[in-house]
Image (cartoon, rainbow, N blue to C red; front, side, top):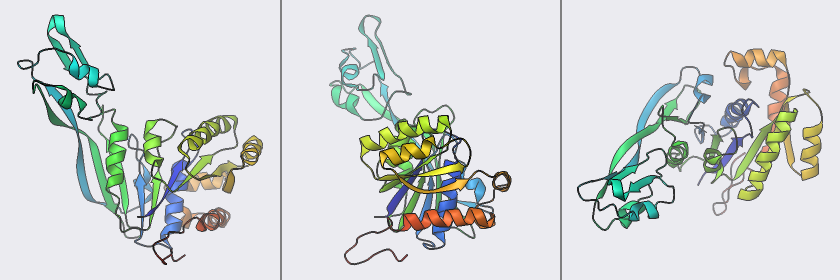
Length: 299
């Protein structure tokens, strides 16, 4: 089983994807061909744009099973609606009306079990795609792309994660922003979560939301402060008061922002940026230990 690191943030725009692709690039130097980057921000995946020359090796269409109610067999007894935990089925007996709301359905199959008249079958509905890419420099880049109009982010993320190779040693999840269900699904099997924040009032507010989530799911975590030097010290004071490990910080720099905006990653960054990423990887390295008998990661 690979060691899984999730990069998350309580809000968008903190630099979560920046950290994810650069950490992946740094770790790839050590774990060449034994590390995968998985873009779980399925509504807007963009890790790919940082890897020039990447080509699509494989595309898999992902389906959701949707119940279909046969009106000729249905007795409108409402058993299926009562069984449905997600209120996805509406049955109005006086009107002989029964309908499934695809946006609420979680494809759990409970309605099929509930129906004693064999009036419910299932049909596949596309919710998105899982794409696998290769480049000349990196190996193992996967992304989920949600179908426009679909609300099944969590289901697609779950399917995306199933396609991670079990032969790899390190997996880096680039999580969606926020603290909602897609984020919870992304980090659910992570061995360690890195929270990316910024030294602003908004950054602190949403960091607290993410920390509360981490306490609920009970997964080890630390923090990286991006855009360091901007704002005030409130984020640092909060991290210290909560006993949260500060893995490192990336300075606020117009030069860095300009280079990053052109799609460059850490290898093409100024030395003062590379040094900060090296410190982060150094602080992270002692967590990258995996027990398999007497075998350890070769760091």
